[in-house]
Structures are given as structure tokens and as C-alpha cells.
Length: 189
Length: 224
Image (cartoon, rainbow over all chains, first blue to last red; front, side, top):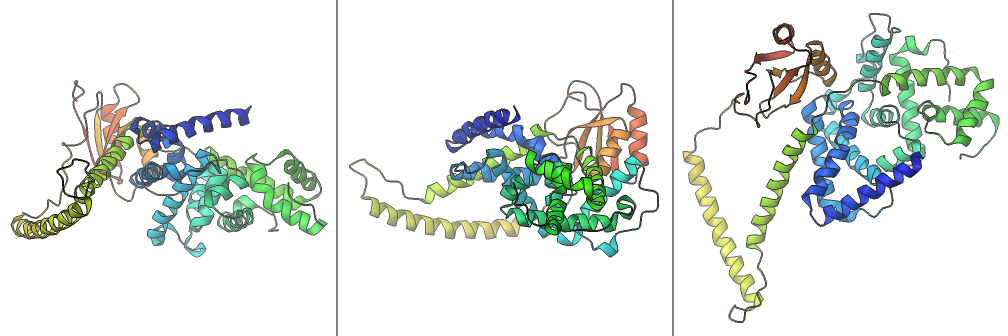
């Protein structure tokens, strides 16, 4: 059922892309509105300010507007657009790399018991923001957006093995940031 | 489906699959593989629990309310600027004419090149003169001359530039407000109350926060 819905949505997106190739502005408006919430959801957890989120979304759709004819249907339109947003965000984060990442040693010790739900959530979100850029984006795509490993590989244009490795390292770092969460679980893999 | 090697690498491979078990995106066969292995492996069982906790926290995290119409308007401004600059380029590109009395295309190219050269020289001379006489750009923004008016907006606020999205969302929600527009170029957000009659309380909360640079109420009449 979900597969059929996905195919139907992708067919609609393909029609919009065809119209964008003909420079029909209503089509780019429709695609923009269809994807704005999804992209904002993804980006709001990896860039610190709403202005930056909006800027990356608009940069993404400028690329879509100017390169729609280059879409060859090798992936779903949604994966293609997420890929553009991913690379745009990556560039933006690398420009501000000093502010965006800190080392493990910079991360403060929790002053309260993080096992309470809201506090734990806040600690997890803060810890994720301290991961290196690629690891942060990978875990956001998996846990915040719910993408499969294959989808993340397509979005990031990386082999599946690289995606798994980034996730592995992200998990190891989170374990160090959040010792109270991992309890006695031994580090494996 | 991934290959099934010996027991040690089976553990390692299952370990790598656990995040996608946690977000329920694995194919059925890989899902069963993780479950089968976790039954006999304490470390993997604990890791599944940990990753499910992290996944639940991240997937349920609230996000800032997106304002697609406002963003779309800014996108169109950029698109219009792009189209305008494309149009400017076209004026210096020689256009092929079919009328009999026009010079041949290569002659037009030469005329256009000369015209473009003369135009460029003229442009730079004019630019230099304007730069000498132009007053310095204003180093401030106004907060009253922004964006189209929105009905029912009762609070305008400017937050400090270092505020995070989570902090902004929490502050707005705690103040019983929601974002209906913004930020403008000057960083002004337009907010409306989520609870009737709570505007003064909302303002008090906003003003009490060190993350707020400025907050004011505005008229709730038709055009604010």
C-alpha cells in the first residue's frame, strides 16, 4: 500500500518536474509547498537558525528550477531533492564548521539525571548537534526522517558501507556523550 | 539482503543494521536476521533498546513551525532577480534577425560587441561617479516597513541572533504565541496568540527572556 502511494506521489512529482522544465512557475510553487515542511523538518535539526533553514531550502529549489531537465529518473524525485538539500546543507555547515561542531571534550557533563523523558530528549538532540557534520546528517536522515540505509546512500551519493560506517561512529560518539543512556551495554561491532 | 557469513561477522553485521531496525526501514528478511541474532546476544539486545530510545527521541522532537508561504515569497524574489539578470545578459547577445534589410548575423555580432564595450566603459564611469556622490548605506533596519500586513497579528518580536530553533520554538510556545510570519530582513517575527486575551502575559514572558531583543504589541485592526 505504502509502495503504491510512493509511486503515485513520485509520478505526480515527475509531472511537476516536466512542467518546471517548461519554466511553469506554478509547478515550482507546488513542488516547493509539497516539500517545504519535509525539508524544514530535516534542516531545522542540523542548522541552528531558521534563516539558514529557509536559505538552504531556497537554494535547493533554485537548483531544482535550473536543473530540472537533468533529472533522469534514476531515483525518486523526493530522493533527488533530498540529495540536493543534503549537499547544500553540507556546504553551509562546512562554511560554519567552527561553530557547528565541537570535540567530545568540549561537551559538558550532564548536571541532571538525563533519564527523565524531556531532559533525555534534550540531551540527545544536543549531543547529535556535536557530531561531525557527515555523521550528524546521516543520523538525522535515519532517525529524524526515517530513511532506509539504501535511501541515505542515494541521497548522500555514498556507498551503503560508508553510510553504515558513519552511523557506527555516530553511535559510538553518542554513547560517550550520553553514558547514562547506554548503561552497561558494552561497545561492540 | 546481506550475505550471511560466520558467527563473529554475523554479530558485526547485525550490529551495523540495528539503527535501521530501530527506524523500521529494514526489509523483512533483515529484520528477522536482527531479531534472531538478538535473541542470543545480550549486547545486541541492549543496543536495539538504546537505538530505539534515541530514534524515538529524535523522531518525536518538535520542530519550529514552518511558514512555507513566506519562504516561497522570498524564493520568488530570488527567482525574479535571476530572471532579470538573465534578461540583462540577453541584451548583449546578438539576436539573429530574418528581415532582409538587417545586416548579416556576423556584422551584428561585431556591432553588439562594440556596443557592449562602449556600454561597459560608460557603466564603469557612471558607477565611479555615483559611488563618489552616494551617501553611505544605512546601517540599520526598520521594523515597521516590512512584508505584507497580516490580519490578526498582535506581537512583533526580534530575537538575539544566536537563538537556536529549539529555544525559539520553546519560547514562542511558552509565551502562548505562534509564528505567523517572518523573520523579515530585519529579523522581525510576527506572532499571534494561541489563547485569546493573553497578549499582555505573552509580552511579559517574551520581555523577561534574555533571548528577546525587542517585543511589542500592535493594533489588531484590519491592517494591524
